[in-house]
Length: 157
Image (cartoon, rainbow, N blue to C red):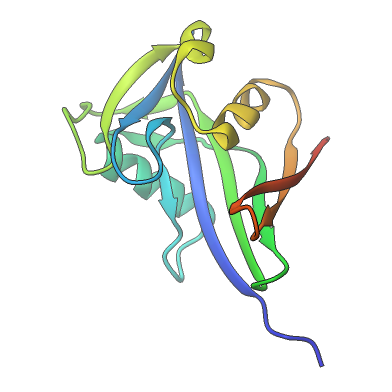
């Protein structure tokens, strides 16, 4: 008999305006640095609905016409955990940008500046894939002993 797996779902939605992307300058807890808007999927909403809601909550912008770009997941065999992050991009948005939110200050950043920004490795790893044709799937096996990422597998279609 197999043990049950603990699934957790998140979304990320990169909002693009020409050569600029909308990021949050997050400066709290363990996730400091620049990150795209996103967050947990609330049951029973769809992944796309969650991405739209999270962008609105974290930036004030209404987004539409999201394009699915890929899956980023962490698996932890020792704890039977699987964390799945569904990634989207859009160029369709309206509204007024919030000054600041609990997740960080929303800022438009030129894509060319991304290599110079403080950013989590997981976001930096997938960032260029948002702008390539096709989709991606990245699986990261979590190393419990070292409390860090272990083996990383990247597939593009």
